[in-house]
Amino acid sequence: MTLDKTYRLVPGTTVFDSEQSAKGYHLNQFCMSLMTAENRAAYLADERAYLDAWPLREEQKRALLDRDLNAAMREGGNIYFLAKWGATLGFSFQQMAGSMTGMTEEEYRAMMAGGGRPVEGNRIDHAVLEAAHAPKTPAGHAAVTAAVFTSHVPAIGAAMDHDKTHEPYWRPVFEGYEYSRAWERENVPDVVFLVYNDHASAFDQSLVPTFVLGTGASYPVADEGYGPRPVPAVEGDPDLAAHIAHSLIRDDFDLTLAHEMPVDHGLTVPLSLMFGDVGAWPCKVIPFHVNVVQYPVPSGARCFRLGRALRRAIESYDRPLKVQVWGTGGMSHQLQGPRAGLINREWDNAFLDRLVEDPAGLAGVPHLEYVEEAGSEGIELVMWLIARGALGDVDGAGEIEVKHRFYHVPASNTAVGHLILENRPRAEEPAVKE
Ligand code: DHB
Ligand code: FE
Image 1: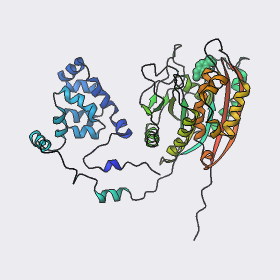
Image 2: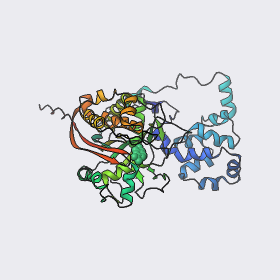
Image 3: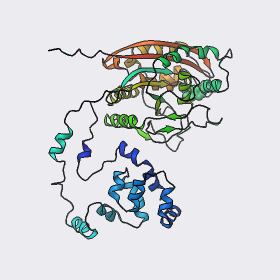
Image 4: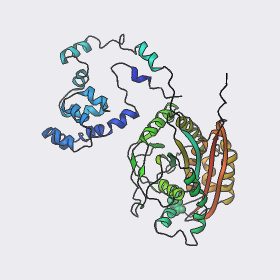
């Protein structure tokens, strides 16, 4: 199943999708800079110098200097962004649109006055449509190889960063991840799709998106008040992320796409736990933030459904990549109020049991139960259901194998829980021999 981008065949039309957005990112951001009178004046004073200060490709600069909006669109520009540039040069929207049609300004205005361009003769050409739908054989497709579940306590990162992992308090925590690091060395993924929550680092109260998919090429490590953790920067996978965005949004999950965002302990601590102290992370990472900070937060059931759609998205990507899906946060913890320090071993372990054996049933657990039984911040556990939903067994497409399970109390204010589940897709039907 490949993604339907038939919209590309509509003649004389560029649909602004994730691919165009990636191509035109800096061009569109340049346009946004023209939303102050001061920057407009600087642009008009010396267009070339102003453009040279932006990381634009020469084709993009040329398009603007030549006033060639068709070229700017081909280069990833979007008309609503480019309109800021056109306004700076004194063009009306009608002048801008008309300039792309090959007509003079007068001809275009006359056409609009006469009722506009007719749709007849401007639909997709049938021959083009048929050629585009001819079957193609992909070189392979991506696979979800495993799901990893782990707590993401900042103090665990600090213990690693300050060489305290052998202290008696920390040793049992890190011993629980020795197997995991060896397993990761044996099973290096190409990409980790890392589900975590930002903890008021990238997103403050001015923007509270429920699901944020990172579509950028790299992500800086956030400074959460103690200075950024001394860990490698995180390399993204814009192409796979754009594919996943397209597929999930088509499946009716409303995502926010973030091309740039700092990533906090929610993302870097799991990487440190699973890969250890390394000079560079061994794979690309697609960050996926879930709002579990401000209610209403998404239900376990919605997270689980999203995970199922995520596997379909990953497995429809036409490159043979090994993708692990990680769910992070939890287990029981409460970081606030007179109930701070709440730990419920029994509930946590039942959660781990059910995550393995009855994920669909576990997805029905209401928020209230997480808060009451696992503590206010124990709600982070809903994110584990995204990773669990991405394993094929939940849709009858294979089996899972429990590779590792670990539970320990305490790490700072939390219980630490950890699971590794491998995904075993059902063997392909053997080819029929003639
Ligand atoms: C702690 C745990 C978390 O999951 C978190 O996000 C912040 C702090 C803690 O126990 O200290
Ligand atoms: Fe957290």
